Image (cartoon, rainbow, N blue to C red; front, side, top):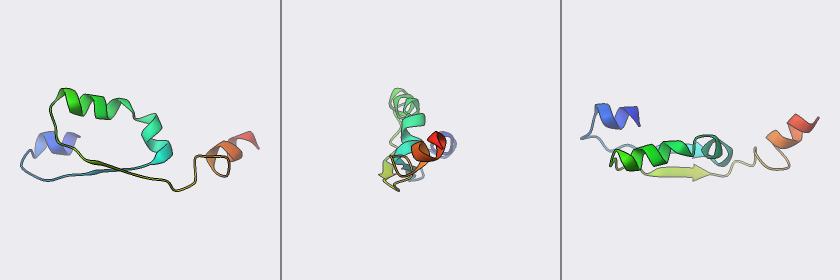
Amino acid sequence: MGAQVARPGRQLRALSGDGGLRFTAQEPATAIQLRLSLPIVVFDNGEYGEYGEIRDEMR
């Protein structure tokens, strides 16, 4: 988001894993408030669900 503010003429995209997006859900809200066009690509890498981070934390 900072890069988009600094270079408004450039086309940028945000890339996030499914778990990471949950921790940064406020960022898209800020982008909307600033009227930034910032496409967000979310991928499911399987590291947040029962076979990833949650499982590791429970160990």
